[in-house]
Image 1 (cartoon, rainbow, N blue to C red):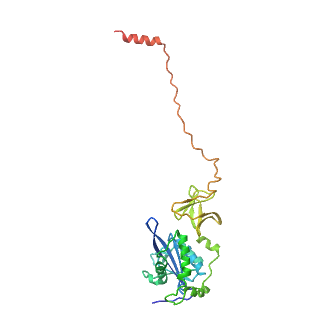
Image 2 (image 1 turned 90 degrees about the vertical axis):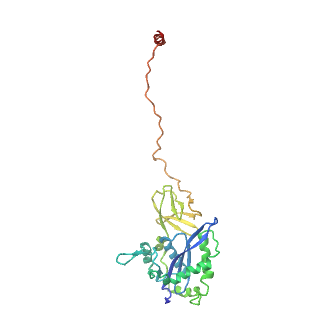
Length: 304
């Protein structure tokens, strides 16, 4: 049975994946985040490298920002990003990080019936539509380039077409639905969800998304810092202070060094490397004898 919701009431969310070919012929996959407003059918998509909780949360924020506000509740399948499973008593065991995010945002979590993905058919249709309409033949250099192209497609194709069910353009219905969406909280409340914690290595780098980014001195091994990705950049934060801004790495394993990464590291007081030592043996005293003593010894040996 098809069901309808009121404006601003529900969004449906899902993750899919799309395959692409590298220049050397190898095939890779990229994750596709999809959010659909159930009343207007407005669509938001974002391509990401990892389908982890931190990325999932950031995609929600980007989607709500694109739509202009927050719905009352979101509908999900039983992904580990939302629910870890059931307890022995049958109670839902939530992903605590995502639950904390939803509570702070005032967002209710709704789950599909088990083994019935059609319950969130709008999100499923959004993934299929993106794969069939946008993905074939797309050419991109990196994820930033891919998402810029996807945003243009959303604004010029996906959300301006006549929707097959409503017989209206999603962009026109979104203009009505925005009045029913709740505004996003201020940046101070959202900031913890825009960053990921990482620990500083012995050489002053932090690892994020298969690359390494340097910190300016002073830093210490094991120190916890926050990584905040942006459009083509990666920011490093220590508490409320932004200490470094780097261009995003273009290849796995790349190291992006900060100009002051090792400037000012103290050298005095450091334990000196032990100097290699030679060994002097004790002196051996040799008895001194006259040559006549040796001649007498040779004569005694030679006599029959």
